[in-house]
Length: 131
Image: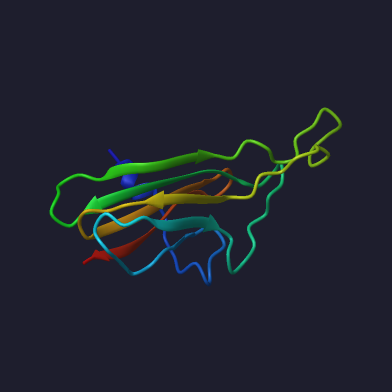
């Protein structure tokens, strides 16, 4: 039986519009607030249409000295131009980007997961050192 983790795709976000991009400092001070932005389509725009869109982004943190990951954020994007008038005729569209303020006690890895309604599950990661 295939595992869910085997379904995730990854690629360099500069070359692939579906890969989530994690933007934050490479190193932070323990307990100090810092900003993290995760987006899809930073270098190559991802379509944001009724027919083709990013449905959600999730962010996790896996401390270096821990067995488990911890979910930090879950954001669903619900408006893709849907309307009773037809596809892409709606009054609102949501862009696939998440901003969060974090504090960390220890070094570890941030993971970003995203889901495209046509091209499936995508992941990326970034190491953050705590000093």
